Image (cartoon, rainbow, N blue to C red; front, top):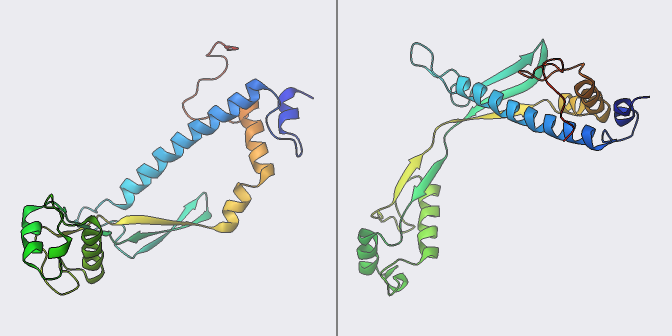
Length: 197
């Protein structure tokens, strides 16, 4: 039995020697980069617009995904997240707070509204969806910004469990180490000189 077969057989972890361990680690890292590039490519497609200007995947819409006829799960376009921006040292905010019975005592000596109060105002503004404090006053310098819609993925749990089953991972490791599976873009062993380092 070869060291590669020993490394991938049965319940033995696929790390029989330094070269096998290094090879698997680096193959995993390369696959990680490939997956990130594939995800970015898919994300670009999901957030694109059709020739008539409509989104490919509108907000709250769902789309199943398939590879070779196997259903992977679904994606859903989530609406953009709204964020609140308010600088505690904004002169307009400080002037407003100094005139306010509710916030005058929170203005620090260096003319900055206390960070905890700024956070409280932002939290309330996000809750109600308007640049106002809990007393209904418009807060100068407070802006609400809505982000871009983002795709949400839901992979089929049973499929993920099957794909990540230890015996499948060992089979993938075996295929990579023995050359039965070749990562995209890699030259074959005939094209490269082995380096034992």
